[in-house]
Length: 291
Image (tube, rainbow, N blue to C red; front, top):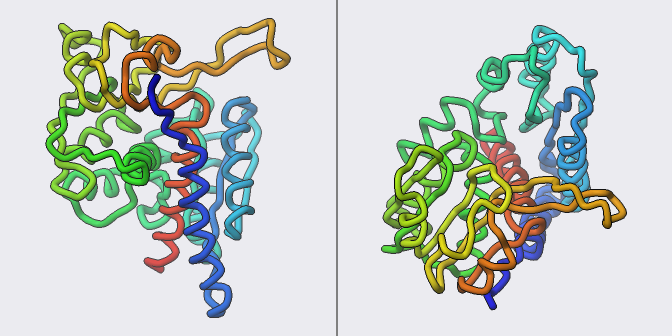
């Protein structure tokens, strides 16, 4: 049976380190980092996620602001709110939670956030800096994955890493970070996606398999190498009438069968999710430092 890579425990450990830094700042009379989140509409998963961020801020002593806007908020109104947060000296970093309602152009909103406060790390300037290996705010989930590997002593150097999924939020940036000439990097990376031929065969060659393909239980035991390390980024609500909530959470990996074959694996929930929030807090601390 595989070692379970506990994202929750790792996240709490890093959050303790951030809390120590926040306490030091308070004692020195310095400004406490302030993270804001904008939530448009009533998406259930988004509400859960944003509430977890607010709780994490409380735990480590950050200031936090939650801006809730109705579903019918226009694009102009949202851009005005982004502009307001850009110019608010109290706020060090902020995120606009996605998905946004269909009538709002997500790209426009991301580009309206000033790069120095873009703690989600999706602004083209931050993405470009990441590509060039320059200091900047790195996308939160890929950064969280790298932190998870590092804190759990998983060496990536010289390993064959296969990334399933090419989204700009996870797959593409994590492939860049894994291939970087850095302590946590130096892997040989193959990026595969829904159009890749021989996807199964390529996945089965991976020493480290990062799965962010967005399909529940897509990766099965025949797609992994014996003793590989599997990082499951997916999270899906699957109907489960027998459960009190009426659903259960599944990842992109068929956990029960894959965990019998690999050496280490992240669970869903409790794997990459808590690390994304921690990376967001780390980015906010960085943004506050820059100021």
